[in-house]
Every structure is written in structure tokens, then in C-alpha cells.
Image (tube, rainbow, N blue to C red):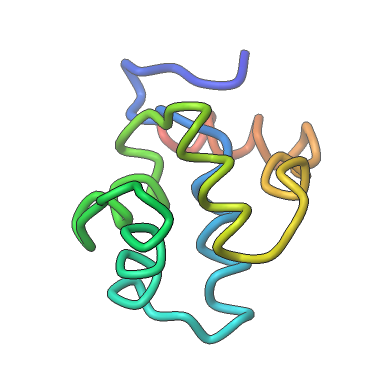
Length: 92
């Protein structure tokens, strides 16, 4: 229901991660650096794949992303069902 790997949608947090990161004026390079400081080394290319839903995300990564952004973890999952369904439909 939330993803279809055959359609290229591999996570539900990517678009929200990108939006929140941009809202805080944090570049992907800076975000990558901040994640590394928290103990999770992720390249800019990996961050881009996550944000564009081309890579699945581990639960511990979501926690680190939330910590870096200074938000509760559930905020990364704060998507309306309609948005999720639209993303899956447009990806297919």
C-alpha cells in the first residue's frame, strides 16, 4: 500500500525529508555531514536517492534524520494518505 518497488517508490519519508531539509536551508552535502557526525555515514548521492524514493530507508536512519533536523520522528511520516497514493500512482 505504501510502496511498490516495481514502480520505483521505495519509502514514504523521502519527500518529507527533502521538504523539511529545504525548509531549514540545509544542503544535501551539509545534511550528509550532520548525519555522519551522528554516526551514520550517508553520501549526498544516497540522500538524493532517499529523498526521491529510489532507496529504501532503515528505521535507525529515520531516527538519525529526525535528530539532525531537530524534529520528532513521526513528523517524517506526517503524510496524508492521498499524497502517498498520488506518488505511487504517478510513479507507475
